[in-house]
Each structure stands twice: as C-alpha cells, then as structure tokens.
Length: 299
Image 1: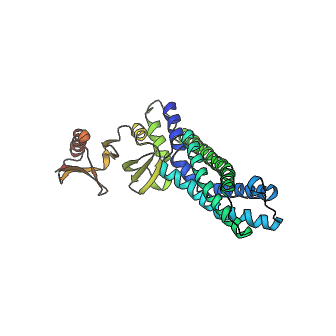
Image 2: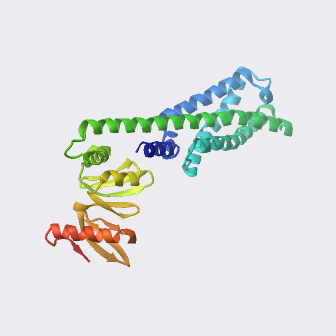
Image 3: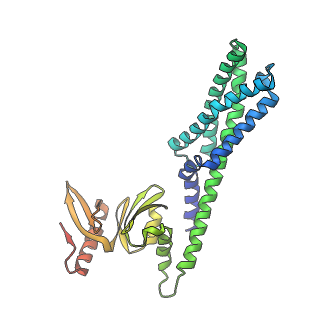
C-alpha cells in the first residue's frame, strides 16, 4: 500500500494538483513579486542591450511597461500549458518551463522593441534584436522554472498533509478491533467524504485521479484513484463498469435499453453495466431479490 501511495503522490502532484496551485492567490502573488524583482533589477542595472541613456523615471516607464504587459501573459501561458499538457513528471515541468520561457521571451522582445521605437524613434538592427531576445529568454526561463517548482512543491506538501490528516482521523475514529479487522479500510474511505454527505453510499464514478461519490444525502468529489477505492470498499458493493461502483443495498434491477444493460438504483440513477461485470451484476440483483422477497427484479 505504501508503494501505491508513493506512486499516486508523484503522479497527482505532477498533474492535476499543480494545475490548481498555479492559479492560487499565493502563487499569483509570488509570481508578481518575482516579476517586480526582475523589473527592479533591470531599472537599476540596465544590462547589455538595455544600456540606454535614460533617466531613472524613463527606465521605470520602459521596464515597468515590459513587466505590466508580459507578466499577465506569462502567468496565463504557464497555467494553460499545465492544463493542456497534463504533465506527469518534474522533467516534463522543466522542459515546459524552457519552452514557455522561450515563447514569452519573444513577447518581451517585441514589447522592448516597440518601447525602443517609442522612446528613441528608431528601429533596432538585427544584432540588437537578437541580443535583446537572448536577454529576455535569460529572464523568462528562470522565472517559469521557479514558478513551476513552487507550484510542484506546494502541491506535493498539500497532498502529503491531506493524507497525513486523513490517516490520523481514521486512526482516532475507526481503530481496528479484533472482532472486525476489515473495518479499517472502509472507515478510511468513509473518512475521506465531506461530512455533509454522510456514509450511506449509493454509487461511485471514477474520474481519473478523482471520484464522484453519490450518497443518499448528495454528491461530492474525493481525491482518490478508482482502483484504490474498490479495494477499500470491500464487499459492500460491486464494480459494474470500468468507471462505476454500486452499493448492494441500493440496487433495484437490471434493464436492457437500446442493446445495453443498465442497472437501476434506489436513487433513480441508471448506470451502464459492461459485459465483463454482467454475471456479477445479475448475481447481485438475484441476491437482493431473495433478501427482499422478490422486490428486486430483472428486466
């Protein structure tokens, strides 16, 4: 189980949680502060191709204009690449930081050249353009690398903290007893649910690294893999599809609709039953029917 948790931590941290972290207020603020630091350094030093004879206020307007235009674009680009790329490893994050920085450097360079014409009423030559691009890339790539690294670390810490808190709550509220040693995995799963959902499970849908959990009180999302949930739920229900699990006590009947087998639940929901699980589903329906005196049917 520890190896499963370690693998899950690496995969989720490098994917969905990082995409969430990149848009948090804390990381937006840190990214903005980093952009201000870059602008301040350029105003104070005006290195290389930016060595213009400008007053302090002109430098502030020049480099501040670059930052004001390109920082929002850069952060939006960072989040969009994470969303589109579905990144799963630190190496992929590093490569994406290089690509994103190279792309943003072109925008920084374009803004710098536009401001140069505005301030000096002249178009730069090709040598100056190339030098400005390289300097902009030297700023943008480390900025993206730092941004992705912070998002990755924050997501990893958040996931580990969530798992630690969950395990601690389960230990306090559902310590295993000699009479029922199998209760701990189920209690561990139930402890992950939002309190307002209660513990009367109806069905579960797997959605990548998340679950949509439906109970008699409503529905919610839980950070957990579907395969791990199946193991923890034990024999209180059965899997009927690669993405669906249903609780035995809420099974109503099986139906055929448009050539597909569907299972109807007490909530009124109808879920697909794949061919692999049809035998188990029929057995579950028959068992429920016998227990309820024929109240559960199969059509």
